[in-house]
Image (tube, rainbow, N blue to C red; front, top):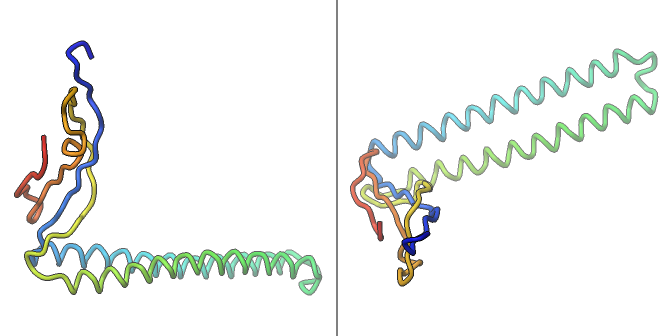
Length: 147
């Protein structure tokens, strides 16, 4: 810091231009995520049922209140996880509709990157932190803001 500057970390917004290729890739990613959610739901149901069956089979009296409490507890945990997975799937389905509704050449936020920049006394910090990269099919088309 002897030269009066400081290196700071900043977030860079990545914006993508919607193209047929971008749309296809985004829809494929979302479809894969939906399929993954479906697989997780199926696995959850199977494992939950196996656990309930194991609890019941290990008990001399499956109607014992303690066994019923264990079964109810497992079922509650499965139901909570199912609700969480179904919410994730619902959000993915919403994203899928949003992607399909995007117009070609529209610019959408795709994510964030981090980088470092040097700041000095007298620099406009807001400008230094306001940086974005615009990409078209993965190729940088523009850099917006102060480097």
